[in-house]
Amino acid sequence: MQRSTPVIRVGDLGKTFRVPEREPGLRAAARSLVRRRHREVRAVDEITFEVGAGEVVGFLGPNGAGKTTTLKMLSGLLYPTSGTASVLGHVPWRREKSYLRQITLIMGNRNQLQWDIPALDSFDLMRAIYRIPPEDFRQTRDEFIELLDLQDLVRKPIRNLSLGERMKMEVAGALLHRPKVLFLDEPTIGLDVTMQRRIRQFVAEYNRRFGATVLLTSHYMADVQALCRRVIVIHHGKLLYDGPLAGLGSQFAAYKTIGLSLHDGSVELGSYGEVIHRDGDHVTLRVPRVDAPRVAARLLAEVAVADLTIEDPPIEDVIEKVFATEQVD
Image (cartoon, rainbow, N blue to C red; front, top):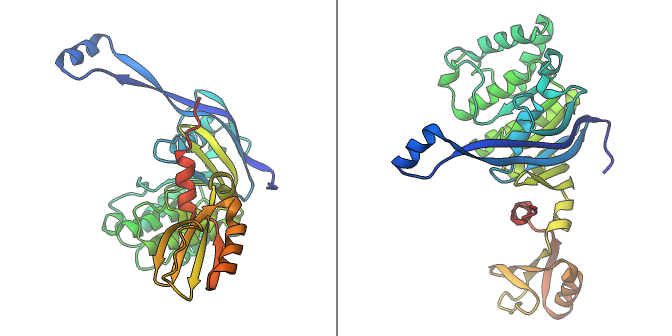
C-alpha cells in the first residue's frame, strides 16, 4: 500500500508496568506492608509502524492488547519504557504546547466536558484553553453543531443528555481547535446503531475537510469497515498485522463462503463443504480458500443452482481468527 509522508512514526515502542502482587490471606497482607512483591506486565512489546498524513487507520486488538496504552503514549499521557515515537515531528511525552494544540484524544468511556453546564459554555472554555480566534471558533462550532444535529441540545447541561447525545458533544468539543491528528479510543462504545453511524459520518467528514490523520480503536467492525482502508492488529502487545483491511482475509482466513440459491433446497451438499447455514433453498457453505473455485465449478455442473456467490468470511470472523493467533515469544 502506497502511503503519504508519515505523520506518526513508532519504532520498537514498548511499555512495561510494574504491578504489585500478593497471595490471599491476612498473613500475606501483613507481609506485603513491609516487603511488597511485584511483577512486570509488558503492555506494549516493541511495535513499529508509520501512519501517513490524512490516513484513517484502524488499531485493532482484544481487550488488554495494548491499544489504549499505545494511544496514551502517542498523546503524551504515558512515558514509554523503550523505543521511540514522533507525531507531527514532536516527541509526544514532552507535552509541548505546540504539539498538544495539534492533537486530540477521545476516549468513549471518559467525559471531558463540564457536567453541570451547557455544552455551549464548555465550548467557550475550550476556545479559551486553545486560544482559538473568535471568528474561527464560531465558524467551527456552528459547523459542528449542524453536522452533528446539536441545535436543540447545546443549551442543556451535559448531565441531562443521553449517552449518545453526550458523546456527540464530546466529539465536537474535542475537535473545536481543529487538530491535525485524532486518537480515537472506542468513540462509539455503548451507543445505539443510529448514534454510531452519526459519529462515523462525522469523523469521515472531518477527515475529508481537514485532511486529519486518524488512529482509531473500536470493537465495532462497522466503524472499521466504514472508515479504514488500512488496519494494524496487535495482540499481547505485539504487532500481528499491518496492511489493507481486505488483506486480513487472505492472510488469516483459510476459507471462503459459497452462498447458494437452489431450485431444490432438499439436496445434500455435505460432500462439497461444511454447511454453516441453511434456510429453505438458500444454503451457505464454508470451503478451503484454495478449493473455492473448484468446488464452485462442481456445484454449477452437478447441482441445480439458481444463483451462486463466493465471498470472503465476515470481517468479524477474520478478526476473531487474528486474535486467536498467539504470536508471542
